[in-house]
Image (cartoon, rainbow, N blue to C red):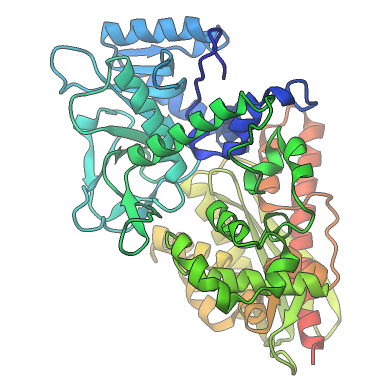
Length: 575
């Protein structure tokens, strides 16, 4: 964002997103390029599934004493909201919701913070920790590495860091949630700039969808993120969220400064487009796409793709397209390539796998057989295909079965579904109902096999059984299903993985469509989409809207089990 005086300020998402976006936003040559209005990235994240979660958390915190809730002024100009935030902090509010921090012009930062939590241990002034609400889990069951602080969590009823309780068996999800930590670091720097950061160790909090719900506190100065380092002995080092933010933020400030001069002769861009996952929803993609070769590695290989640094290193070595990678002498390339990507675990295996995909693309092959001969798929008189659907809050709301009578040659779809927001008891009750029905078939007079794709279904059954215990009718049914899974459940993904290699991976939709020739009825099938359909099926504005969404969910789930059955038939036909 450009200020009226020409200064540059960047938001908390800039350091974690593509630097080409920053470059494009400040490139005077792109003024007027037809593009949709820039979407607010915080709102985009909410609409991806966490909007209701954000409201629920805000409402919980707003009910506490000592809270200044700025949500009612969310539509006011940023300067007005920042003034209200400054007043709230000066007053010593325990919590400030929907805070707009004052501009940090010198540090080139602007940003909103979901929650500011006052630090009671800072004497002589009111100081605050930044907290963000995220619609995903941020903790995992893993003890912290030696030398690192224990993870602390405070309940939403007592959100202060001073009230937090240690969780010695859990850690922050460093591999998947680095973006969250870097965004907190950005907001911490803004609090420093306005004199409201606490005196103690730099900290920030995340309210994820973990159980129990609470503020998960991160030590922003502790080195936990593996990053490339040219000077470290192994080619990488651990850096903290603050280090990661400061480096990436300053780099993007430099990118923006250079970009503002790109209309001048002999000034070249600092960065060049590399297709990543966020490109599909980026307002600048139409400006970047023409700059990429149609065979660019980042464009053609979307499954288990190389990261931005890996692609950049390959380009510097003269390998930019799938054709070039397919023909490359990888053994000759590796001595120059591997030292530059030592931050990645298994870097050699990654590039070899991508080269294999490039070779298949060059040959026009989507699925490759790993070995000749028939594929062994266990059979039974009753073959039951199973697929489940989960809501945005990770509740199993639909158990779908396709019962195939292999003797009579008939199939019947059977579903167990709840069109309500489920709690623990409701989720268990629905699962027990489905397992009771399934047990009646499995323990009947005819041999039965239950087929699923990946271990997602069996893992969820096991989690529900563990949560419920073996006592009571529901617990006994879920325990039976968990144990029966070992005996009569068949994971078709394991079979596919042993016999096929796919350019686009081995997901059910890839293998069933490319191998078995199956087609889904929905134009845009997918698990994340089904979560949105479920939300509409439950909370849609009219009976008609809800009924249409329910039909769409059921049809999608039925197609998933039909695809599993089609895949099984195709596997048996291979020789």
